[in-house]
Length: 205
Image (tube, rainbow, N blue to C red; front, side, top):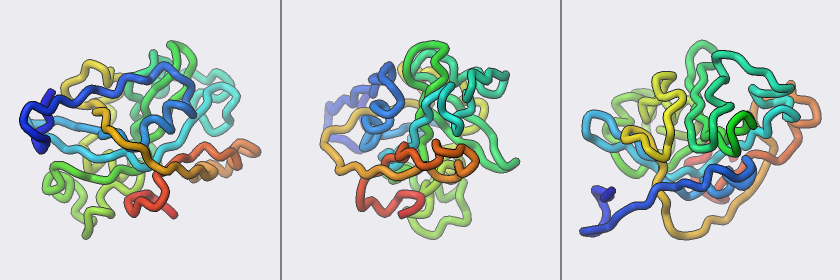
């Protein structure tokens, strides 16, 4: 796979470290590049904010207490698959499943720094005025990237339309409690939101 904006012959390896626990995967995903290919064109951006969801014990997870429904079935797939859900009647949210089959653990992508295909993203996000507004939230980034329930269950390791590329370099990572999970009791205070410190594209400071 050759990155269009890379140097001649540059080949980008796919991120494939999905089998670890969700906290490890969440931290590893920061700084990697999410790619969506549609109609032969790429939309891409650097993952700058994520949240880890720890499965059955985690009161904020869709798989809390072993809950299993047609809606969340993709979250029980082997690590590396995509779990997309629809929320509040208006937003899709993309999760990267991790761990082993039937664990029900995943990482929510919360924000991305767009790097390729910004014109396509602005077409889909007419309300955005600046690049930093395009993908600064889980619903914003799925709309900008054209991600919906039709991508639910895709395998990021082999899909040609949605995958994650590895990037070199290290980022300074900060952690905070997750956003919008006040209903989860003590789990609402767990520092399971991870972000690249100082990046202006995150959803909230």
